[in-house]
Amino acid sequence: MHSIKLFLTDVDGCLTDGGMYYTAEGEVMKRFCVYDGMGMVCLQQAGIPCGILTSENSAVVKARAEKLKLRFLYRGVGSKVNPDCLTKLQAAQEICAQTGIGLEDVCYVGDDINDVELLRAVGYPCCPPNARPEVKAINGIHVLQTPGGQGAIREITDNILKECGISQSY
Image (cartoon, rainbow, N blue to C red):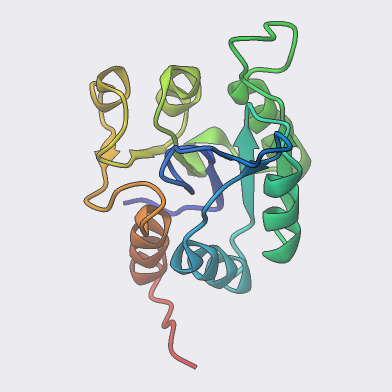
């Protein structure tokens, strides 16, 4: 693994198990793994900015990003339902332009067809084992061992920190 300077991830299927839970009032709920959140917090403390790129425009995702104090949150990007929105690659390019970081120094975790373009463009593409076959077939992709929503993000954040020689102990 080469030097990672920016960490980005999708939500559904990566930070969550891909399920959406609806209340009787129609509100969406998502289950997040606290280990994944701590992994992203540790990356940020090590100076590696983190962000979320999701096609959903969910208040739940906004609340999670705020709780983790993530530097970047792009909601409603890469939507196959709304082709007029930014693609996830365009969103990542905006972030890279803001930070002066090249796509070759980005780790992105994605799991579905709207992630393929960005996964092919970054230096360190990853996906959970529950990813779509089209994603797992991407040349050079790192297929994680841990399923989305169950610590997949923590698996890769721990690996990044280890490669950087950064201890996670307090």
